[in-house]
Figure (cartoon, rainbow, N blue to C red):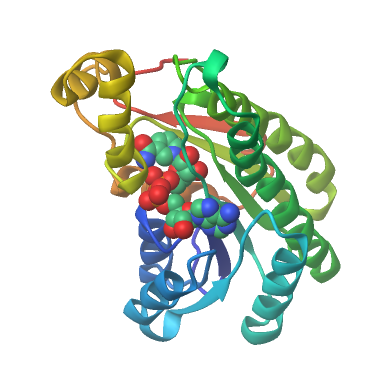
Length: 257
Ligand code: NAD
């Protein structure tokens, strides 16, 4: 069970969780395409990984960029074995004042992006006939709701449905699909939310951390990028259809299933 000599595409890997997954895959012998709309960031991450990575400009909501990006990976790296559909954003607001444009933007990155990258990678995986592993970055919000996060919770629940369909359609081709559901991880995505939620809820930033984000964990701790990357390594390296259509929650016990 290993990612050695495999080729992985990790979307949103210029920063945060995706970046750490790319680093861990490369350290375990994979070659990684750092696919991000932020090309400078993608190239910088790829450079840090030396010969084990390339930067690819990919806005996951742009059908042509996704198709071209995956085609380039196949051309330059020879194959695609693993997709980590990870790119994401957060926008917080109560439903009554949620702009429709913000709803559509968030849904598009998380749901359309997952669909487009999955479709492009599946075509290559099926044609090559060597199977593959597709991993979606869900969230505890794939299982639980929080105030102010209507499109995020909706999108993250939706990814579990997509993973189950991919698991069923991909099985005969040896393609597995699973979801990682992290608790709060201190990446730029979360750092941005702390002052926003403090303002919206009328509480201090410290209280947002202790009384909102971590209040239901077993130990008051943030999940780390290393915790999430360890799950991504496990899913990617698993070699049979025994583990497919599943979701794993890594959240310090915030959500127990
Ligand atoms: P981050 O902001 O550190 O990184 C997100 C990356 O996605 C950035 O590099 C950004 O450029 C890229 N991106 C954004 N829109 C894109 C698009 N349209 N196309 C391509 N790339 C795009 O965030 P993160 O915390 O590392 O989040 C990564 C994933 O993990 C997201 O799906 C997020 O919902 C999920 N997640 C995060 C947490 C957390 O607490 N940080 C918890 C659960 C799930």
